[in-house]
Length: 80
Ligand SMILES: [Zn+2]
Image (tube, rainbow, N blue to C red; front, top):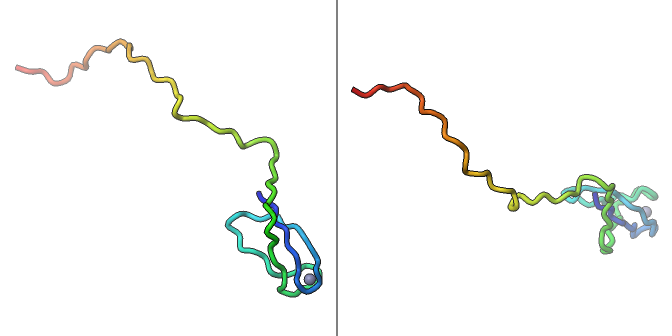
């Protein structure tokens, strides 16, 4: 999850918040309690914890061999 940096316009306190991208920006400053916090425009740094970022390539899946032997047809409907 990306870490966003905020700065309060009232007391100039800066703080970081880990948020989902879909989360709404926080306005309340944890220092003075005023709704003056503003998201800083610096590029968010992503917290990567090593796993879970594998890229699977589905396009390069090997095709199944088409030389499978046909099994005998089921003897169901008998024609006259
Ligand atoms: Zn503040």
